[in-house]
Image 1 (cartoon, helix red, strand yellow):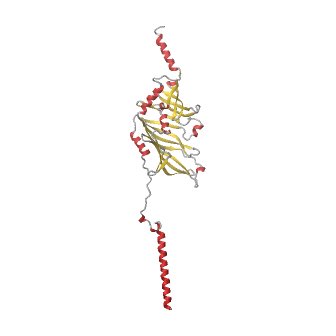
Image 2 (cartoon, one colour):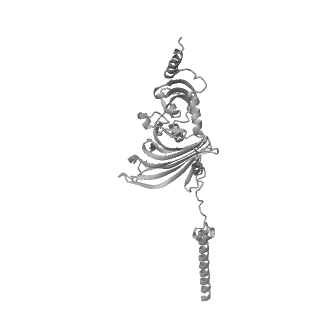
Image 3 (cartoon, rainbow, N blue to C red):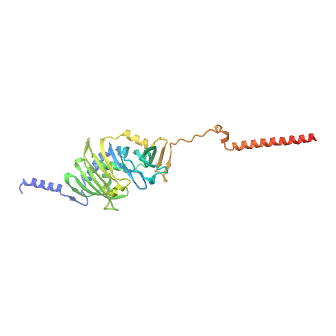
Length: 374
């Protein structure tokens, strides 16, 4: 063979190997796609802070799961197992008046989650909710009547759906859900499609279909999960778009995710925790200690007098109001005599005794006068 033909042949073989799909039972060890995912996920796990907006359904009725769309600003910080986030509502749809849910005066009560804090630490994890309470009249008049403050406490490892929604929408942290890549195929735009065995949550094993974007620091662009129990039904779906670099880290500009089902279709719209649409506006390559401490204090050391705490760390769950002021006891001497227990009976006894004594005196005197007359 001509010596000049050897490099050409090698080049052709190399191009064919890149463009041809790769099907294998076990992808060889080494610098594989899973290794790349783990490497870039570890970069993010070392510490970052990200913010943006999120649009999601807000449940109006726990019976019908009727919901409205609410938009919130959010900010999340993460370093290893330490995670904190805060979300604040900026706008929401007006709820639909439902006569069956109205009270005797024709007003329908509903709640909007105005603000939420999430915290994960070595001591515990949990969330704190600030819910605004409204009354809606049949004529459409909406009146705010109060605010509810609730905290839910769990163990340090408890997972939260909103936390998963944000992190997976970034196209990151999928590697911790993958056990083994079973099939890999290179596609258009140099992206890579993989089928992998893994899990979505603890105890829910199945199969992931992912589309990786090596040009965007191996970001996951699309993801679908199918469980072993329902292999033909999507139990999670995510897709993102856009590319923004912050130093060595790359994130999308927008994403949509349904952590409990498919993104499209009538079934997804009926889910109480349905599709979420996110935008990403800013990322810092450092952990936000101030935000994290705020989340910790708000969740685990809240001093609001109206706070109700739901402690899920014990069985059965305890519900307490730790900051409610104790009722003030009025000193006994300051209680009006007529309100002291037994005092009214004592006064009645004294009065009756006095009257009887007077009657006896009168009777005795009359008898003495009669004897004198005789």
